[in-house]
Image (cartoon, rainbow, N blue to C red; front, side):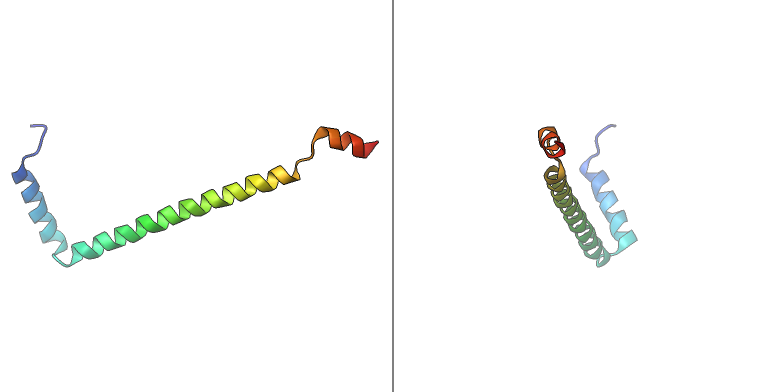
Amino acid sequence: MGSLSIWHWLIVLVIVLLLFGRGKLPELMGDMAKGIKSFKKGMADDDADDQRTVEHRADETVSPAKEKASKS
């Protein structure tokens, strides 16, 4: 009862084809692929922004020894 046989999958496939039509499925999959690509690109852009921010913060920090030397 837990596993599905090939007949179950064929019935599901027929129902999906009836609901979406033969031409609609490739269009739907293309839209899904575009969404995944844009998500990956957005994640890569976020990673690049985070790395630049960390490097920028590291450049701004001043060591305590230099602060004491500049005050005296």
